[in-house]
Length: 486
Ligand SMILES: Cc1cc2nc3c(=O)[nH]c(=O)nc-3n(C[C@H](O)[C@H](O)[C@H](O)COP(=O)(O)O)c2cc1C
Ligand code: SF4
Image 1 (cartoon, helix red, strand yellow):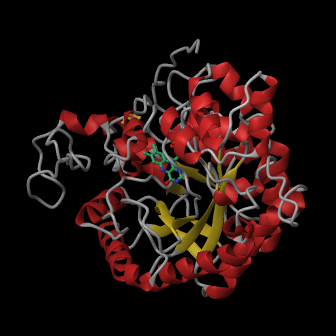
Image 2: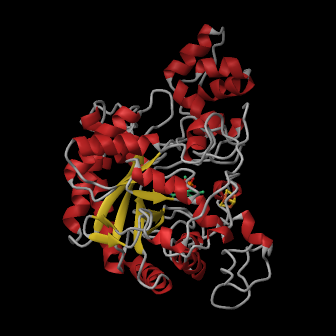
Image 3: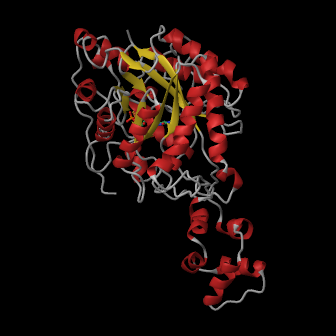
């Protein structure tokens, strides 16, 4: 990629009085919930739960540290709705998770002095396997069909049986092998097997519309019981619900094809959740303003969805971009494909090396257009923007020019969780500024505990609340940001 480098722009920070009078720090509303400001920390997976998906002391530290900065809204990481093992990803699909989630709510209440509203992002995802060895795949995973025999016959071969065919395929050059395989088989071999919502020949995929509304509703109910203020339905990036919304979804069972049909399950999920939880809980979603893949949905689709979600009564619309499997880089043998490695992934978490416009506020045109469409349709649903929001004037402008109603900052909040408080106190000059090179994201890709490279400049300071800093297992990285210097 011919990438240019965008310097981190100089920032002007407001005085305490200017911050207090700003839009950024004005009160907001998300359906039934009032927020103390328009500031937002979007979901970030830190890989700190137990293998069974339970909250750990490290998770409490992680979210407690964000709460120290007192954002208006803090969204807890993508949390699994199913009662199935999913590694150290948080889970909410059973009542046994409620006590841990309740601890999390209490820590955030306490450390933000009740100021931060705590939401949880609920996710469903389908099976994905690591990229296989060619030999193992041909011998064990390829399901041999008559069409394979036919295809090799056109190449002048006549294997006696399926085993002989597998032997033959193993000895073919890549090009000849790929000519024998279907597109999907080639993808399974080169990228690793990945279930798709369009695999309706698989009974559990065909049944997704029957099971998902109930599963999302169960998890939302558990979150409300634990004391969360809101639920964010994860309809973005590479996961199940975004795949239903995708322009590539051509299911023929009424849940794919037209935009209306693609939005049907997301709307059914929302209604099931809304019916299950009380009117006190805010319920909205995160979805894509642009899929950024060939044949994928663009802003026009997103505007249509935004209006449909607003009409259905969602309390907020959080807009993200890209992050798809379809254009991800080929993983190494033995690794799983990661949806933030292709162009769509780069747009999701833009770095200073991205081509074209700088990453700072790069994606604002999407929430701006969606918000305009929603307003035009007569709805006041708040819209949340993200993507390189890293300084006060940029955020203030975005709120003033109609781009959004809430400003979300993921990596800048990771780099310095106190940054919101520092701006508000007129101490912006003390902010540790994110360098947008995605060291954190590389850790996420490896499912390693996510940290920020800037935290390790200060290895000595005790963690907030005293005590030696908690470090990663290799003893090299702090697991939370150093405390704010007062
Ligand atoms: C380590 C890491 C983990 C993330 N995990 C999630 C997630 O669980 N759910 C989600 O919707 N977005 C996730 N994101 C994307 C962010 O929420 C955000 O949309 C993106 O980083 C762009 O915002 P920023 O420029 O402020 O960082 C993650 C980002 C990072 C860096
Ligand atoms: S690791 Fe880099 S990109 Fe990630 S939050 Fe820290 S400074 Fe920003």
